Image (cartoon, rainbow, N blue to C red; front, side, top):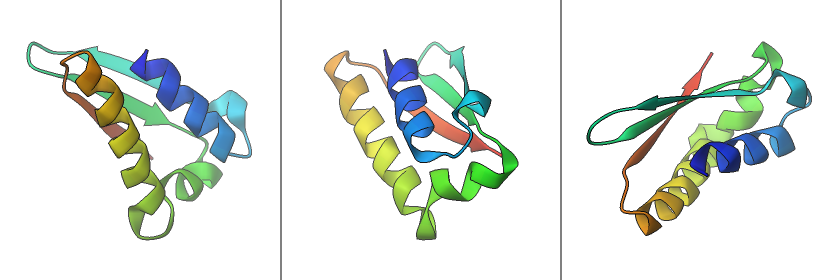
Length: 77
């Protein structure tokens, strides 16, 4: 579910939604979501001073907390 959420938000923000890829790495304690977008769209996903990235992380944490999980978002460039 968290993967779908991040994918939806990222596709809404970027100019090239076909380039959005979210990889899930499951661990014992937590889950890591790796977000990869087109090179031109990295700034749109991160935002000024990282505000958009932080907002996405907050939404993701709230969503994951419902299920009692810890989820981390990494934006790859």
